[in-house]
Image (cartoon, rainbow, N blue to C red; front, side):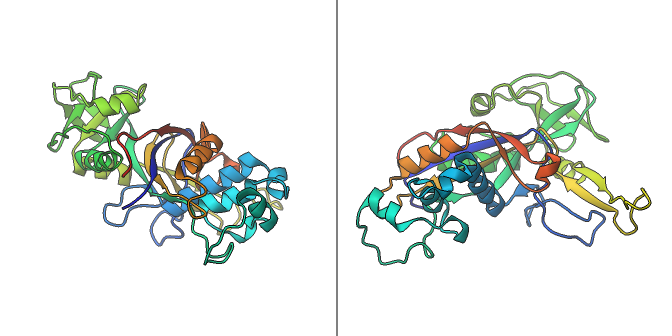
Length: 312
């Protein structure tokens, strides 16, 4: 895949995330998004890209978006693709870039300058006997993460195989001959696995335990947060009939990551590096992802990571 610039973005959930997948016939009425082939929690690229767009709109402000003299609305469309709510002003475009000859129409057929991946779960917090929680990951999860890092030009390390009911601490021994994860028992190996890239990218994140793929699958399918929601009848002050529902959440402290690539826009007048810098300037520190924003859901602390290597 040809692209000019790229970024790794990591997100740590400050509050539970509900990136919903729609209604369900199962016990949970509103489940979260999951990968089809693994059933691991994730946030679809459409949800993530929409959150980035909404965040940039909010960051730029309504006044700038409505101001004909401002280039804010144009940048939203150039970066994320044309949208009827973000049409630009032709006079501003011409004043900014001159007479640009393009075969395509403006703005209906404009694709965005960025490509956004799904947000993939990397470290999942699970209740434990040695601390309030430990982070679990697995060989399959780490191999996938390292594959994405290789795509970005990072040097990666090998991942150990893990037997059922066993585990390895990453970078530091957190103690305990037995680690209880919900109702499962893990026996950590005495050998601590040193993974330098994780130490660099996630400094300050401790109690990371590599478990088997089967144990990880159990944790992320059976240990997510389920909340009960009701609607109060204002006339009676009690729960309204038929309004009871169960909602699944990806709990706070979950760690996810995604990859964003950038291309030139408006021919090559608007460079990929300028688009990358603009996005990083407008998306800093925290972002809201998923539904239930008015309930404080989906607040994530973000970190941008520069790739290694040159153009890819």
